[in-house]
Amino acid sequence: MTRRSKYDRPAHLAERAEGGVRLKTSAMIASIAGEGQRTAPAPFGHALVEAARTRPDIIGLSADLSKYTDLHIFAKAYPDRFYQMGMAEQILMSAAAGLAREGFTPFATTYAVFASRRAYDFIFMAIAEEGLNVKIVCALPGLTTGYGPSHQATEDIAIFRGMPGLTIVDPCDAHEIAQATTAIADHKGPVYMRLLRGNVPMVLDEYGYTFELGKAKMIRGGNDVLIISSGLMTMRALETAKALESDRIDVAVLHVPTIKPLDEATILKEAAKTGRKVVVAENHSVVGGLGEAVAGVLMRAGVMPSGFAQIALPDAFLDAGALPTLHDRYGISTEAMCTRLKAMVG
Image (cartoon, rainbow, N blue to C red; front, side, top):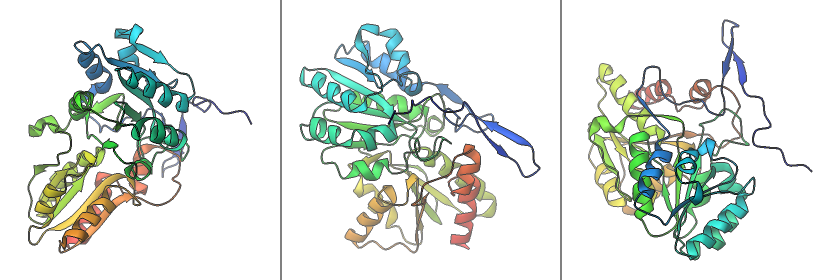
């Protein structure tokens, strides 16, 4: 059977609005930014170029997806330190392992579905078991494309959480991606980082936030509900908290960008505060992600909040379509989160 190209699909998917008007969306590269929201272009690519100025050990590799993982920025700046591996994710990971053995710090990019599903055993055996200094940075995590199950990595964290020695990072926005890129370059050992690419929203800079590998941080306080979130869902959580102020629902947001190792101490401290319900919000399946990790931490420590809920993607193969429609359908839009929290508090 001939393998389909990653690009062997129509450029746009279309849907019909309720009024029958035909709408088009670029399903592969659709931005998660809201209308008028501040964005920064290719934060990972630019941050990697900056890190590489003083780090000749940093190199880049991609499996025919440099443009779609923002690694083309690095390739243009350092063409002699960039390797195009073609549509061969298993070879990509093996080559990255070999280069790490020679003292380099390889950044290997592809889509999250291809790293987690297609190259898992190669990452396990060639990289993680050996503790090699490979950084695996993958675009289209969770529900950030409308192309359906072939490209929606809704279970990547569940797949990778069980891999010993692998650090897992799920940054929120462009501000954090830039900082996290530098941090994982400095970290010794294998890392898997979920990547928001293209024009990425700027959110956390407004809160004076600084990324620290392995640390969860309170972004805002609140007495009624504590949202524990990662990735783009921290942006949604902050939007939800602001929207619910008019309903006099006081929402705190704890951002957890490092999924593994988990900052259990901070999570327990915040979840143990009397009277607050706890909601875990993530751009990932309800199975095996941050929600279940947090629930396990609370259970083992005997911390029982007044209520606990997960806002996550269902354990299902998701539909294709426009991202705003899909985010509403599967409960991870700001509007859907507001509805869920109102019902929980009320």
